[in-house]
Image (cartoon, rainbow, N blue to C red; front, side, top):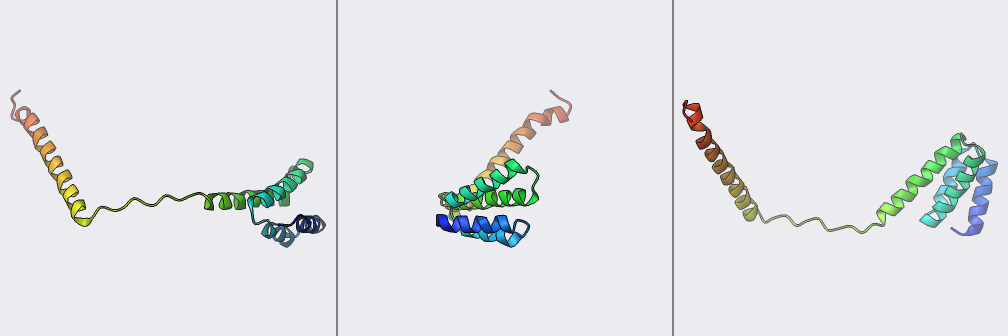
Length: 119
C-alpha cells in the first residue's frame, strides 16, 4: 500500500469510526504484512486511548487474523509421504497379523498351565 493511501484511508476510518465499511476498506488496502503491521499500530494507538473501544478491538483482531493467514500461507509446504505400493502394503499387513498371532500363541502357552491348574 502506498503511504498516501494509508493516510487517506485512516482519515476516512477516523471520520466514520462507527461504520464497518470504512474499517474494511482500510484492511482491504493492507495486502501485505508490513501494511497490516502499520494498520495494527494505528488500532493499538486507539486502544491505548480507549481500551474498551469495540471497533478498535474488533478490527485489531481482524488485523491479527489477516496477518496470520498471510504468514501461514507463505510457509513452505513439505510433500506428503509417498504411499506404499499396494503389494508392499499387503505384505506389511500380513507381517503384522502373523506377529500378532505369534504373540497371542506365545502368551496362551505361558498361561495355559495356570488355567489347567498347574504352575
